[in-house]
Image (cartoon, rainbow, N blue to C red; front, side, top):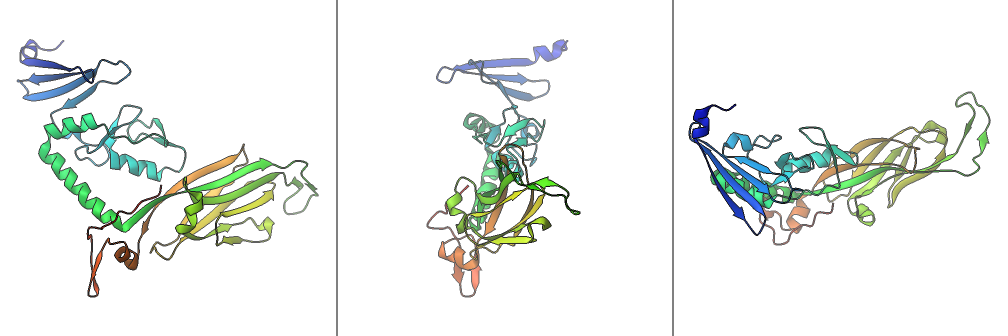
Length: 303
């Protein structure tokens, strides 16, 4: 049971927002000189939200700074939007894990900022919020030098009707080429524009195909074969000359269960100097580059 002196020193002021069905309660504990803001939604399907006025209790668990552009996960944990985006970017499969509880989060989950929660944080910590905004504004300016893209890679699969039976050999034994598969890499949700970013792709092959490597220099970037067993395929992705990135290497083991398997990788493409100047992102002064020049046009990043 809570000590009597603590109960006496606690006061609560409650107000109701009839437009949003939100009940807002401010609880003040004079003995500890702390306040807690609690919002309760009359709609039981929405979770209650508590905001303490202690700054260090409103830090993002990932960056350990004041939460900025807050996002609640399905498991009711809260993070900065940019921090959670990084977690989504590095996830290779269709499901990512909550950084706190490891609960599953589908990567189709919309990273939608809780604007009401953001306003409450700003009202409680105006100085810190302004500093966080300045930081992300400067970061956004630097990021204009980059284009972030997400590439999907993996394999499709289907069984071959009436596969040919091969006689036993000393190297592979008896087998049937009953798996028709296609290894591929493409731009997420924009397959036809993959060529705008990818110049060529190297696909490593199993020795049973008679070649160690197949290079694809035009879209679609894919290789189709018929085989008898899965194996790991090293994939090396080269980018167009507009970008200064080194090739990116990933590996994919063929999946012959059902229709196959896909993964993803996010790449930040670094624009070359001439492209930065052409797009108005930087200005050239003599032989030097004046970085972070405010562009007249905005770059559309394809995801």
